[in-house]
View 1 (tube, rainbow, N blue to C red):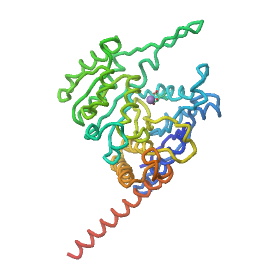
View 2 (view 1 turned 135 degrees about the vertical axis):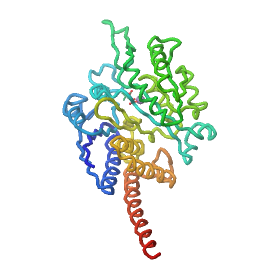
View 3 (view 1 turned 60 degrees about the vertical axis):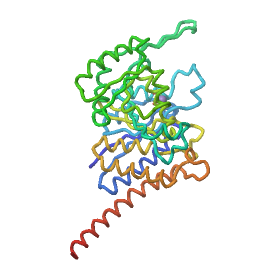
View 4 (view 1 turned 120 degrees about the vertical axis):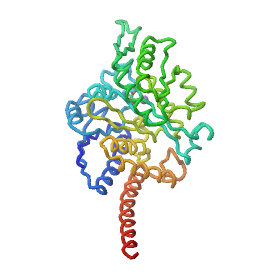
Length: 371
Ligand code: IPM
Ligand code: MN
């Protein structure tokens, strides 16, 4: 299989974690006979420095022409504390989501037995945690009308949703729930917000199309508490843009490290894959960041382009490093491995596993020949 992948390293630790994913994808390509063509493009602070804008046209064009996008991270401290900055790195990502109509952000939350001790939650709460957050990504308060008064003392952001925007992401969430434990929880604030009441109405209207999926409704403040109190109750969480942003960071603590969680953003055009963590500028260039969030995003990318077996190999490689204690600083502050060492180990696992499989095949053949 031949695929074109736009690679956007982005800011901070983006380049170093993404490099590990490319290493792993190259191992997959070598073993399974695929060809991945990478087109490196700019976005974020890096792009502002080099071109003056956070999302150059060339990047959008490359994304539109490719089969998938692998993205690192965005954000730079020099913009964070400057409310008057006219151009911000994050605008690049928001614009890209809009241009590519990436209306659904899919964030799986799982826990590993060997990492339970890292979570602030007790072991018994972490058992059986396996859910997916479907976050609406191109609407709501992020993209609504923004206003600031002349004197600069009043500001507003509007949260607007239209039925079709809710339907298309809800449809995906229902379909996923169907393949899983058949439970969908809509998280909203329907006791206060008109836009949330629309979400509830639309999901209620759609529910009869999926009679096998049990739908329940939860206010976002309660959901924030339930994710910590009793996280294994969730299967698929569906929610609007900003609630999803907040809840997915909260949910990441269940896994033990923000550095572990991947995400996929899908819509009408090319899909984008990125770890959920930020640019972590303090660690940039130090080869200490956890690349697993990015590598697991690359696994989601492989699934998306129809390479499910290859995607599972990558996940097995990741699980093997975690079980073996080959982990980065965030997971083990005493015995740890560098970002690039983890990439090498997983790429090596994939190559070795394929060789062993080849050997096993021959052995079986030999045996049956002897018999
Ligand atoms: C995320 C990030 C972005 C968001 C920022 C960088 C704009 O926090 O992908 O969750 O708020 O959506
Ligand atoms: Mn976020």
